[in-house]
Image (cartoon, rainbow, N blue to C red; front, side):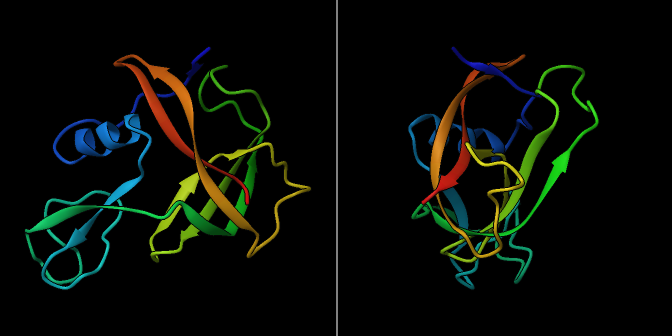
Length: 136
C-alpha cells in the first residue's frame, strides 16, 4: 500500500526527476560545462551559470552526514510522529535530505554507509516512488 506524503514540487526539472524515480533510478543534473552536480533542481548551474544540464544516474551509495527527529506534526497526521530525517552525502558528492528506512535516532551514526531504495507513495498528484535510504 502506498504511503501518503506531502505534495511534491512539480514543474520543469522536477517532473523529470520524479519520472526517473518512478523508473527506480535516482538521477540528478550534472552541468556539462563545469561537471558539478547542482542540487536541488536548477534551470542553470549554480556554480558556473551553464544551462546544459544532463540527467546522470547516481550510484545510490551514500553516508549519513546528519540527522534529526521531528516530534511536531507538521503534516497534520500524514506521517507518524516522531519521524526521522537524515542528510546524506551521495558518493557523487551531492547532499540529499531523506527519511531513513528502518532506522531510528538510536541507530543513526555520522558516516554510517547507507544505500538507496524507493518507497511507493502518493500525494494529490498521484502515485510516485520516493527515494529514501537504508543501512548498507
